[in-house]
Length: 205
Length: 228
Image 1 (tube, chains in turn red, blue):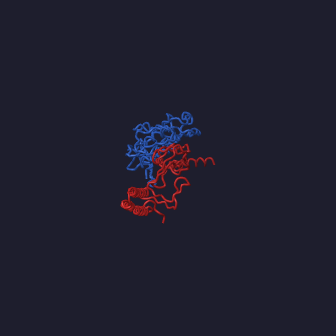
Image 2 (cartoon, helix red, strand yellow):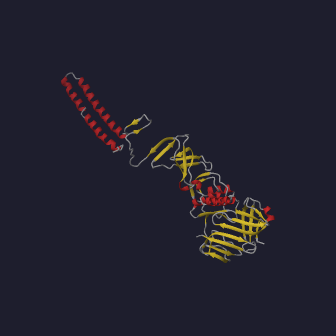
Image 3 (cartoon, chains in turn purple, red):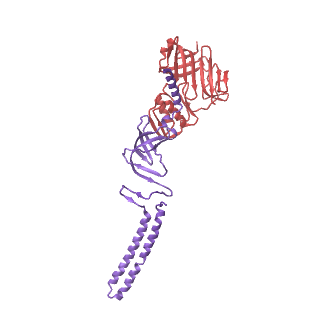
């Protein structure tokens, strides 16, 4: 048995020498100890046959995603080597929490195909995100209302200062005229609001 | 008596295999009473054919520990090229934005070997490089792959490590005789008073892959394997 084992050991050593990339075909777990900027991180493998590594890029499931690690967090991940090469370490598969923030950037649109989007903690539930266009329309509406009501109020004040109803009538008429745009302002806001679902959030169905 | 000596000790029979990729290995038979002077790990200088026009071949290597074996009136030795450190596991290291020369130098340092001045292809840049705790010979193979698709490493006769792409320059060995050949297996058996053919050279337009020197009491031969 011993001579046979020695022969097999020799064959195994010769075969191993033909595949020097074997250590780089495995995955290694370890700690993510720092972020270098962008999606690159410093990594310390649990296996002491591998060195600590710095500036290792994270392999993302899709483009446009980036995130920041919580400083000092005990984040853990898995590292692999693309094509079994020592020159291509990549971080995959996070094991533990450690995310501080993440961003998703898309050239055209982002579609979320669900009836409800939850923001913040579990108690903060919003049915739809409206955003900047809503704020612009709302500001235009409020400014228009303030202007019209302010003008009407001024005219009515003047009317009250007149000595007779006949003298006050033109000011009352002016107040009524000042309120004319209000209906238009609401109509404009309503028309703009009609566009929100298609420009901000693509509705499912 | 053979005209081969190791550390000045006569060699009865020698077989020295010199591959184009890897380390050379010499299997020597010496008189039993001399083997004590060639303990495992000791430096070995093998000289052949000192009367040849070129002055003969000179090999610098290391006696492998545990490979000496006394048998009847002779002892067998196995000598490998260089310091015998290519099986040493490297210290794990990581590099960013370096040339091949940087990890190559560290691997050879861990192995206790030296880089040949004939080396080339050590300039390519590596965005990252990882040295795992694996035999230095394996790291050399990985670095060669990263440096150039045609790059190789081998230990030269002088014990230094060549790293780079072979030029397959024509051999300087012009005086030789063909003893045997096999076109199918792409080898020839040659004899020469001055067997200076090296792996990585060419002979008659054919690139040499392995040279195996055979020295016995009354003859010397070279079995030459060609690249396919």
